Image (cartoon, rainbow over all chains, first blue to last red; front, top):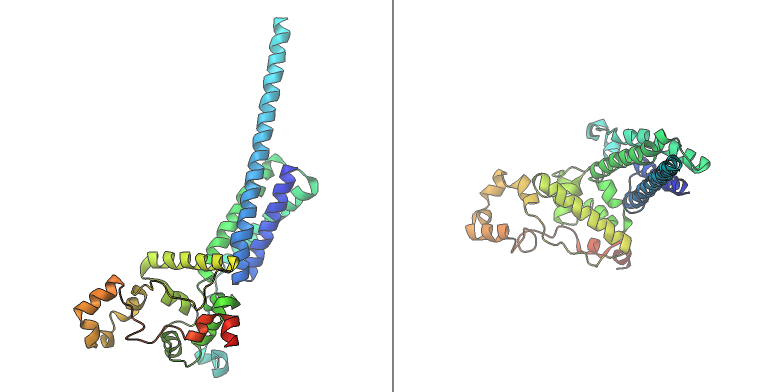
Length: 75
Length: 214
């Protein structure tokens, strides 16, 4: 869900960028700076969070599994 | 009357920039990968970081460079109808303002006249002009523009960069006055006002709607 949200934000920010590159006016520059850039920043944060959560989850799973193995060995 | 109307002699050779094409080229894979992510809800591990972080940021950096370079143009400044439209329109009129005099004499490039006069000397002059431009964008977004527009702390190095070495400028008795030079360099007085005409006509400083209503 987080990754999908990040992709939506990246998509929107890139569309703003392309619009600005094709026709540079004050309006498109304002959209690029104050709309597109924050959306891209938010997308990067979401991806980082998603990556961090996945990493945390996999670490917890490894710890749980190795703990279980130790218990099995001890038993 | 534009250069096109007068014949090919009056049309300056264009210097096209292609940097924007690199921005588009970087944005296309970023859009494709993001669209796959939106549709499928997940991305292959090898694509997630480059596709959602690295390529879009790279495309944005190129976009930023394009914006910094192309925003020097008079057309860009004039694209904000309020408050810049009347100022840019007044350049072509014979209204006796300093900006109009420079424009009509061809003393400033018609491509980036605003930037030439409103950026100080050297790299820090350009940085200062860019910061001022971003401030203008913020003012436009939040609707904070006080009319009539007031010039604050105009950098006389913008004038001196072109005029300081001109024979006619050096020959002027007033410019040689040491006390006046000190006052000018200290910023207590400026070039315009007492000695030279205002940079822009008063009605152009009232904005598009207010100026038209007058």
